[in-house]
Structures are given as structure tokens and as C-alpha cells.
Length: 171
Image 1 (tube, rainbow, N blue to C red):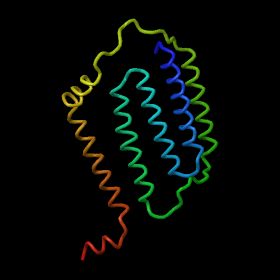
Image 2 (cartoon, rainbow, N blue to C red; image 1 turned 180 degrees about the vertical axis):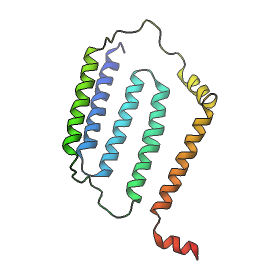
Image 3 (cartoon, helix red, strand yellow; image 1 turned 120 degrees about the horizontal axis):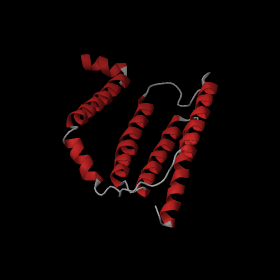
Image 4 (tube, one colour; image 1 turned 135 degrees about the vertical axis):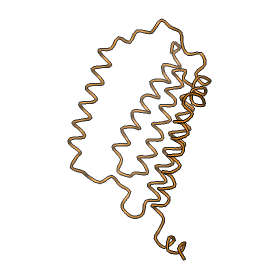
């Protein structure tokens, strides 16, 4: 990150990412919160690009923006009844206290850490190493995770089906 354009892009993406993450908490509508979450995920992918982690950036967009966010939108839209807003809760003040404590801890660690650059060179070929690991050593956990996600999707669809269609299917 030596050139000025990359530094400006990094800070612009950082502001967009943190701003949209704060908006997730601030908005009352769940659909809007998921949209802000998608913007935050895209901002994180952009940050990965500025850090020369292209494979991780593409994976971020495909998995989080493309799959997880769409799954959350489907869950919100397909859930019957109820309002789509964030209701007030008695846990607001404890959550705020925990957030301030976590923020203070992160600020302390960021200030106290020695951020000098390592003497080693950068990663030359990340995509092939990750691909070899996923389709070699970690193929079984990778496939188990995909089957579990498929089962969760089918379970969510079955749970939100109206009762009338189940009765019709039995006849």
C-alpha cells in the first residue's frame, strides 16, 4: 500500500464499511439492515483488494454478499406474520456497555501493538494454495459444510410453508 490511490481507496472503503456496519444497528427495518450488511460485506471485499488478497475478496463477495445475505433476505421475507422492525429490548444498555468495552479493548490493542512490517515477502499465489487445501486436505469438512447448509435451507423452506399446502400434499 505505497501509492496514494491505494491509501485513499483503503480509507474510503474503511469509512463505508464502518458506516454501513453502524447503520445496521441504527436502522429499524430489518430489510434495510440486511442491505446495509451487504454494503458492509462489499466494503470488506474492497479492503481485501487493497491488501492484495484477491481470492479472499472474491470469496467474500460470493459467499457473504451472494449467499448469506440473500439467505437472510429470504428468511425475513418468508417468515410469516410479525413486524419487520427491530423492537425495543431491555438489553439495549448492557449491549451498549459491552460494545464500549470491546471498542476500548480494540483501541488499546491497536495503539499498543507494534505494527512494523515483516521482513518476508508477500504471498505470491494464494488462490492455488487455498484451492489445493479445500480440495485436498480439507475436502471432507468442505463437503460436510455444504450438506449442512443445504439441509438448513430445506428445513427453513419446510418451516415457512403454510399449513394449507401441507394438508393438500397429504391428500
